[in-house]
Image (cartoon, rainbow over all chains, first blue to last red; front, side, top):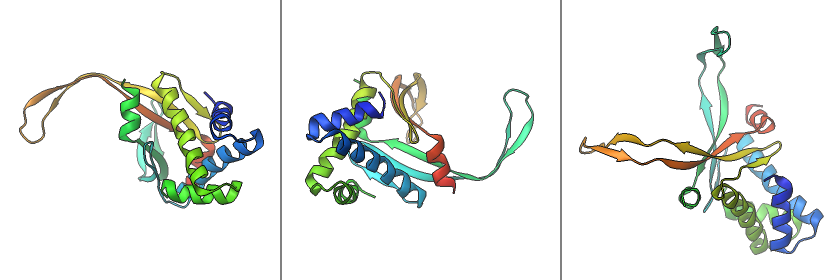
Length: 91
Length: 91
């Protein structure tokens, strides 16, 4: 499934025209990205939450060469699926 | 940001009312849940991909009593952050 399939769902189920459905989907994605970009979380009930986690610098290893390399401190996005989502994939 | 706050922003952007915007967010998240429930994956360029990860059965322990318990295999929804999104949180 790709973005196009989601857009089609939105236009069918919400009764929007294609350009509006596209804009709606793009806007949702942009809102999630921008909010996390500001360091804030997005919490969508019945789906899950996105949050930014700070990772400290650490020593890693290049799996191909076995060489040690330092991995710089960075921020990562973490998605935590909600109860409903978790239950849906287990049935 | 909660679903309600997101709905307000989305409503403003695409000029629908707040209830309709919340409906669109639900269609968006539900199409992802449904795809994963069917064992499909969802790839959204610039954002990331959702897929199901399988966790093997394991022997766990009840942290209170210390008793051994069998933890059955399960599936969990997993989000892999896309390149563009990763850059957004690190800039």
